Image 1: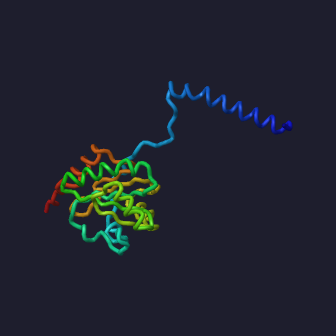
Image 2: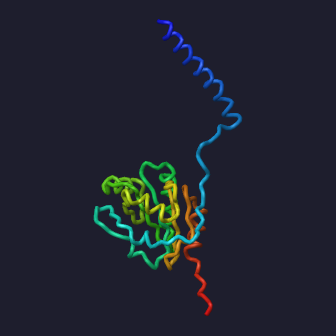
Image 3: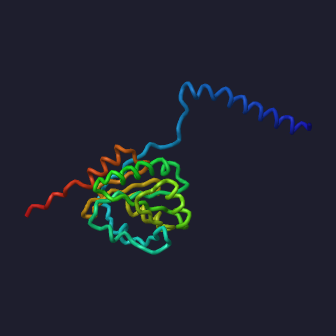
Length: 192
């Protein structure tokens, strides 16, 4: 071996030893995580009009909008097949849809190919409507308050179409139950 190659292998060996020694330390003392905690996006006045007007594609490749869902309480979940936390929360959304909570669950996938998304939805037993947003999905998420376009992203709407809450990150059963309560909460009539 040449001098350069020999030094290179020694360097790699030293780096490997540091990794071997640091591993047990991290297990005992806890390794730092780079995953941010899920955040609830403030439900400051955000107009849902963009959501109902968005040009979407159904899983058969046909153009559609969400206008037929106006007047219904909704949990709208933005996701993608490659998103790990999305895969974790899908079973919770499926469970919520099965419970017939009075709130309609809708999935908005950010991808372009209806066939691959349809196959994925079938594999995950998705029992709620799924639509593709394609590239405009990022702008739609920004318009709904997710300025960093993080997935998964969930928006909760009441019967009047007002956004009553939104959440960045995977939704747990408890968060989904709270979202149902928020979506079904009666809106106080303004006093004359």
